[in-house]
Length: 291
Length: 321
Image (tube, rainbow over all chains, first blue to last red):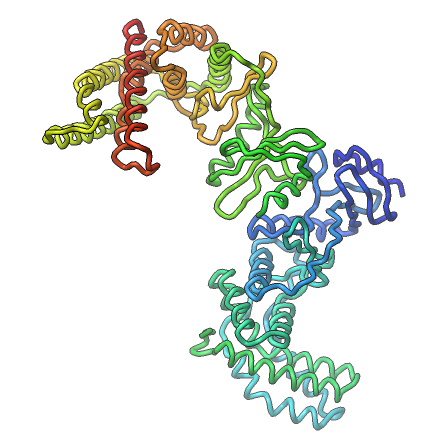
């Protein structure tokens, strides 16, 4: 592929392939190429990364601009973007406040980045749909079915809200943390944005699993402090909502490793209870509360 | 954000970094650059970007352009500050008088390029006149209060003594400033015209560099659309060297300016009014009273004496204006 010539549009004095077609060496260092088929997705990433840096001051793999200010060039059916190639990984674990800040930055940026309707997943908990799915489990896994049905009163308590959670989707999947010039560098993947409730809840669960209680609450506080009141309420709501209950039902529907799924569900259910207790989250009068 | 992380956004890897006051000189293989970290509001940043565009459209070349980061940003936000990068312009003029000549020429050029006749409104003119009178009278009152306080004392400090000695003269300057302001007001109402230009805002020789006979303004951070007199008065004050002052120099600067951009008669009145009002002397009194910089007493005395000397020099020129 002869895109090296094309890259002169970026003002590089010289360009040569290091690893065709992904990395090049230029007079200003190694650069990485991304190829995009969907212009919508590319523009979403371009805006998201620009905002992520300008609103939160976090370095990330933004699109290097051409001499005339464009964030990409067209090459046949593709669009090509150029990024810094950062080789040094961020080896150590982030300190708790930084973990919270990073997540808050992603939520805040996602809120202000317009997303193609294609990726605008609903964050509303599909209770009726999940109940219908649950009934299909009765003949297949009677024991599991009973367990899940018995939890319905608890599930309802965790859904006592008027408004659905409105967390925006964000390109959270597959990111990597790197270091450049002593600073954290967030390398987002080029994947489409994911439903927010999923990645936020997953992230908070992974903090809970891996951190001491004190550090966990520090991360949580940093997360809430980094977003506005509206997003705070949505985040708390997402943590309270019984997504693990729904995931278990959907997994059992696919009939694979049912015992393992139930075991995993029980662990997640208990973990959520502990998280809610640790963070003193509650729903009262159809509003969410944190300590 | 650390400096290396900031420079990373420009793909600059410095060989040498030297601080020059608020500006950092960065020498790299790709050239030499000036990095400035400052406090700017969103509106000020937008104005600077607008000015760049406008200068390009007008083909005005007397400014140093901003360099964008590799991601296309003109400014890099850093906590409560912003940073921006420009090419480093190495001044190669040795004669300060020559630099001032070049500067006044470029200032007239800048004002000429950006001059805009405003829709005349007697009400607007009246309001700005009244506002100016009010501000000046408040300032005068403040100084009178200060004088009456210190005059009660038997022993005055050298600073106070110096201020008391010149106070009567300063009040005369205030009266003259008021008279010229009244004249301006009267003439503007009669001529029914008022124009504004892009004022640099801090038009002193330290914000102007000359290279190979060409001059460039730097630091447009305080620029604003206003009467050309705002810049001109700033320039006149900052170009007067106390104790070695030659009134002919200022007269020649003004003539040079007018060759390029002629002032209206009423604007000349406004200039005289601006220059007569001893604001900079009053500022040194405030500086002395607050002493936030924790300067020594003698430093305050020197500054005041210098300002009085400049004021006397200005008064010489104004007699002929």
